[in-house]
Image (cartoon, rainbow, N blue to C red; front, side):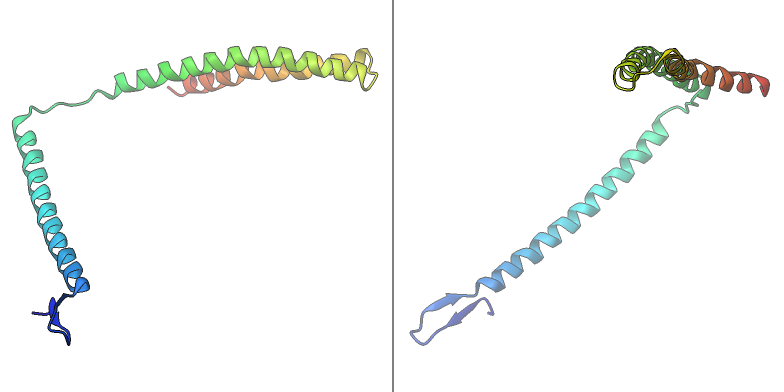
Length: 137
């Protein structure tokens, strides 16, 4: 036996590396047999469900309606948040233009129109996309 050896004092000594390798081989054998069992069970289960169940066809229109609903909700949230960001951003930039740069009426108007254009894009862009979508349907 390779796992047991004798030394000069006639004491039995176990070869730990041999047993460790043997345990690893046995564990690998068990895992590979388990993988085969799991695979066979999975195939049998899927086949049984396929034979036992009725055929169901998914309606893609309902799924797309849900996508449109979620998309419009996200767009509404972004538009509402965009309103507050635009107001705060415009006011902050007006204050910077007046107090730091000493800007006058022209600079304040350009800041206001810039932020109006930014905010209006939250509504103009979706309207343009919807217009194009409706034109080709």
